[in-house]
Image (cartoon, rainbow, N blue to C red; front, side, top):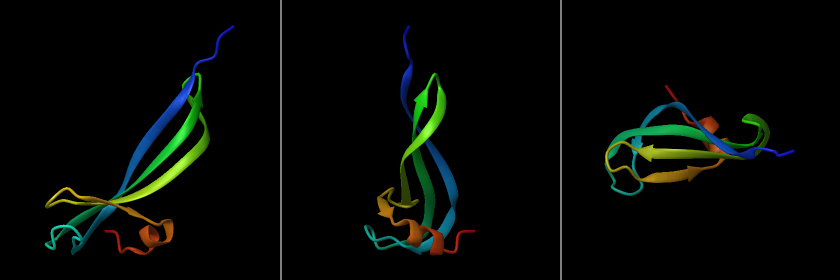
Length: 77
């Protein structure tokens, strides 16, 4: 008997916020997304391992990690 297991990461786009980028200093659209990683068994996602919130600048492409509370407070539209 054998088991097929692994990890699967799903990226969910929450929305876009207009803000000043920390890296380039330009006011541009910032894409807010959530990356959730789950343990899978026979290609079925079972146990959530990690959840990460990311803000990405559409002008320079720089990415920044966000706290869960900070990501929820942003006026996403």
